[in-house]
Image 1: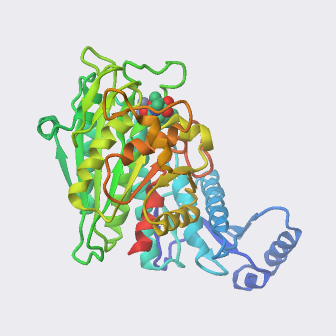
Image 2: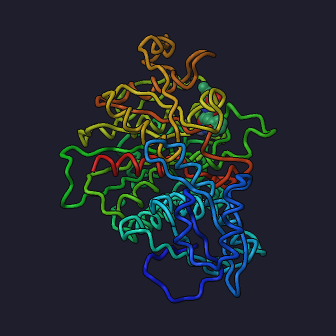
Length: 473
Ligand code: BES
Ligand code: ZN
Ligand code: ZN
């Protein structure tokens, strides 16, 4: 992991990086006349966004980087410059570098964010580990608050990515809960884990049904961050889908391709856990509760079957017509459970439907809900800032009709149309509070890297939730 420092350092860094946007800021660069002239020529030439040279024993790299506070797209351009910078650090195999702004100062934050997030690799299971020599970045432009934010965002995102990348032969539902509990102890948020016996005594029929085919028990984690200075009376509740592996169950997925990445079906759970890390590390004055129902979904001797009627935690009966629509079964119980906290509102995150992924791919998050418009707008704004953008879908009540069952209160699938929305409507049935649902099936897992979103788990949702919470605090 790369650590960012902001104290002035006398260490001779191996790579000096400067960011600037205006030619007149060049005066602040302390290099000889010759170098200054070359830099000026490069700047005016306008071909490349970076220029690298050596002077005596210094290696210097300059980037054109401009922060336009009102244009969120400029934040993302800066993050991508960070990706380039990490590439330079790798190329020159340096252990230390500094990043200094010759202009605004705040652009350093975004540049570092991109650099840090692109430095991730999951090599726990490899004999030959990725060889990132870089360990320290010095950024004197950052104040202590921004510094803590950066390092904690990195910690939260990496934790979340690790969880998604861990295969189910390590990360069972019980281990998922244990890992989150251990992290909670480290960060200062509490985690209570309900075991199978407790889940049975609570009659969480949805979670138990999905677990019937499994040889591993389910888990239900309750996370809480409640600082003394919390400014909200009613808690904000975050719910995350924790399907540690989704085979589809008896409605088995076709093996070719569609099952390969299904260890990522707990991406919602990982996002919620990551948000708690960032919220607690930055001591956000907000009362937040997280609920994570978890199990794998497998065929097995006792597996729930298409046609089964399941009695859910809140008493609703559900006719299961496809065991692959399991996420909504376990989330329904968590959403019913959330009622007892009388939340201000609830945000649910889930790799819920192929339909959401088909609609917008991996470039954004499908959002829908019935909460106050202000909440959705604020979430959209956060999405634009952190580049985890929201595509808001309709959430009209008409879609509910598609979930009618002749023999139970609901069926667990809609028709062939609007699959992401009917899934959201199914969830809404179990709520009695303002509700927002984020379907992250598209962006949660990537087969190949997309800039600082490294391949595998992306931790989508972590920065979105943190930015959203931060702006309410
Ligand atoms: N976990 C899947 C959704 C998914 C698909 C996530 C692709 C990531 C990538 C979910 O449990 C599922 O299988 N949904 C079904 C629902 C259908 C049976 C109504 C789907 O989308 O096909
Ligand atoms: Zn499924
Ligand atoms: Zn699933």
